[in-house]
Length: 378
Image (cartoon, rainbow, N blue to C red):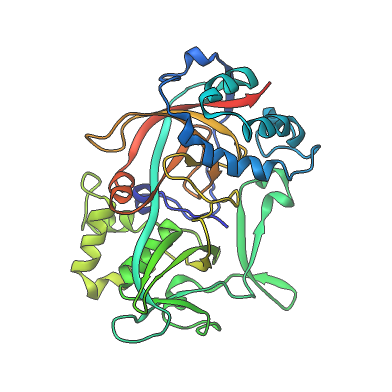
């Protein structure tokens, strides 16, 4: 289904697809011109083609009169399908003119303010084996058949974007086991191991990321992706370490938390289990990982957004501060193709950076200010 990462924010705030209690700020749109978009014209739109093509292929399969996601101004699938048909056939050198002729930009505002928070995520790297043995003693579980995940917005409009999960017992939906119970083997599905990995800390972090590539001891690799979550509220262990005065707000980071857990193996399980949320995985084939839209993500072009406010497949012109010192300011066209529990609010995004050391370097500390414009078909 989707990845969910949000690295630093996930470690110090809410994350992982859990229901949020805070009231979502109001989303406003302000019509703009392409000349208003910072850096418009400098982006190499040829590298945008793979990302938007995946969304367009999905859009073209939609029922024309169906509402195009959460954003009311997005219209229907039928409003988007002519533009998508044209996009899939446009010459790369004509992409700038294509968007200027077929779309109108609207700045997305939060309570009439343009600026919001942007974080980053990436596809994690692990070492593992399909069979238990040697250093490979930590299981990552596949989703069990009795896990029921409920999108509450399908039942009540005011609960759109929120969900719960559990299992049915005696005709009632009851809570699923928490992380502590699952990792201790105190649940009915210890036989549902997807892969064994060599490090419980990395197993914890891939659950925050929601996807990863496992280098197999037998040779080759397995790509894994999010298949479900146990329904328990995510609790950020960075917050717990700050509470215990092991880290401070100033030095907390993904790297600092990983280092602390590795340096304190006798306390690591207890700290990780303060987060009751547990993510289940599936093996992915072909391109990946896949986001909430159900299409493969594209490094640097896929953006996770609040799906209760914005629609999957929506092109967004992003103007975001550099993710780390020495990196470039981000001014490029992206696509809303994913979501996450910590991605809440109208001007809020999580940039997918791809796989590998560079992706992790960019994503890990990213906590940048930025803004974006939604491109809607004329």
